[in-house]
Image (tube, rainbow, N blue to C red; front, side, top):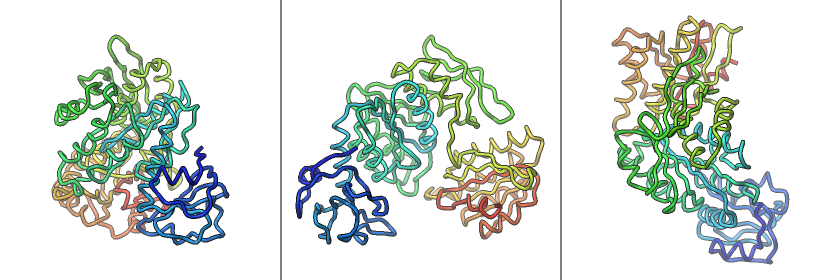
Length: 444
């Protein structure tokens, strides 16, 4: 836990101390969670400004602000968000853990959870909780670091060029994983090439003796492998790969994990073909760090609970099974989710339905990607689509061209009303801003 004098804190963040010096213990960005000893950072967000909650009565030892406030001990800086990052960087430098950064268009969270599960079997491990993967969440994660932690696993998200580099400069990873390069954020970055460049910032930030872990993706393998000296790859034809792959009725994969002359049978606890590569990415790092194969096997086969990722929930006295995969959506992840839906429906011998919300931030090719979703659903013999959002109109057009029933709905409530009496299995998926989990709320 952070323990620092207000004077030293001001030096670290390049601020000006106003008022008396005192020792602060801990950090907080929410006044409701203050206990009295912490330093409070007044961050400005889209919907709120931490400065508005500062008064002489809040339970903090000091505050970091960008304008003078009514508080006995305050540190005035130009940018409180940058100050938060500067302090996290300073705090991280007080320890010597092995830091692993994870980025990618899909699979970051699952790979992070898998790798953390493996490493925890070996040594104390700190890792990103929930979606704390940005310029606020990553520093807050690092402030939990203590001398007992041998490993730190950090998910790194981005919405533009330079953001992964900024996070890596704070965290100082020695291992970096790029899970996948895809269409997510194409609207913000302009092209998939720019997405690869943004994700690749993690690899280029590694020290000379660091390790980059990348997929055997023919489109971006050469580029990613050029960004750092030491590379291990995962997937078909990679350094770590899977063979003898099979799936059970839950669409959970079993395979032989292979690396050099080592092999171990794995039966994943998470469903979906895409999770094979996530497991391989996690295993690649674990093998590099010398984690025994039996630890890797035990962790990947153990319970790894990830909310809103292919979680099955029974509704209507068990007549309708809902697959909650609502955390986010991209063309590739929707395709994988539809494949999983079709596989589960076949195993259960029931009809398959999908309620899909718009996939956001796809840029100029958005209509094409949504149209392709309609084609994929038809190819997989999904029985009906319930669609939400303007972009999903293209999926409806494609689906109807194949004779697939597809309805545009105006709200989550309308979708719930249309599906509540169905018998079979229903997939819920859409971008985070579409909040497709609300359909579940109405079904409840």
